Length: 405
Image 1 (cartoon, helix red, strand yellow):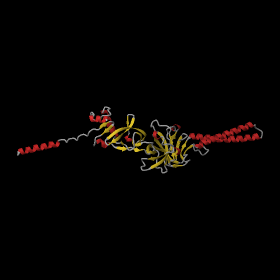
Image 2 (cartoon, one colour):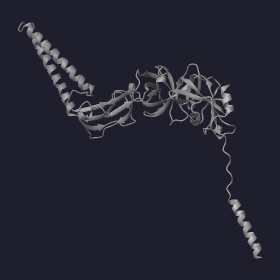
Image 3 (tube, one colour):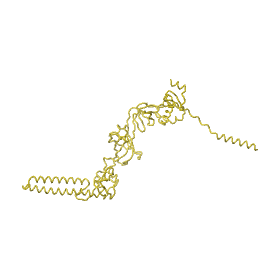
Image 4 (cartoon, helix red, strand yellow):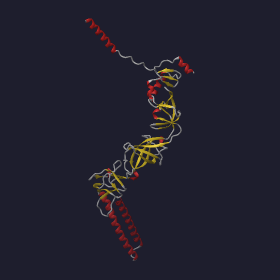
């Protein structure tokens, strides 16, 4: 009985040991080789499934996408500052309120403006006195009591006084004064029809001249939002496309499914040194007021390229100082090809020389293939006629014969 139990234990131990044996690993696939300038993969190599290819397409109209930003239409925008120091006495308008020309937005109690009103009142009194003096001198001259010189002097004094009245009244009228009295009330008035889009003052706020310099926000901003400007950052290659009068399509990420048509109204004649872009200004209608200032958008422009073929931008590599692509010459075989770029966008590239329509270019994992090509070339010791594996094995005699042929 003990002998039978011992046999069973030994058999179970051997079975467990056999179960613990690790399975043999699958054999590694053969390495790719370099034949001339062509990388050749053996059949069923795992990297082949990672190398996506796309045929080069004939040149067609391309859609160029450019970053854009919506801003107020400055032709229909007014930024209002206080011309004199003072204290905010009343605020009559707020953000979102529609206004017309002449609408009072706020009133300030301004002693400085009171001085301007007083100057107007004094000028009016001086002009009235000068007119009376002129009338008296004219009567005396006609009676032969005074000389013509004194009459002419009175006429000149009256003319100067009247000119001073016109100057003083024009100054106070410019800032909203409608009466001849001195009330020190300075009105901030809208000069255009639109909507109050910004307000930067509070009741009782003191305003001083040193608070109204460059970089200080205006007290009010009034704009007509029924049309907006579009600031487009165009690349140098789009300088000939985005000229005044050119049409573009605006797409806003926050308004999916909607497209807006715009027109270029101005383009800069210089390139921004910081961004290397050309500033282009467009105009877009906004009757429903769906678009808002400072929205980020994308401007799409149709561009007709020259002769050549179009490939995805992911296919293009920079080798040294040259641009190139990998072309599939046959299944599993890829060779680098130097190309000339006619136009380059973020998604597509126009190849003007080096490719023909229909040729298959590598677009997926292009850097992987480029790395494999560099390893094989280095392993070959820059011998273009050798067929060398990735491990750096010496070329076979058959490979030398094929290269010689």
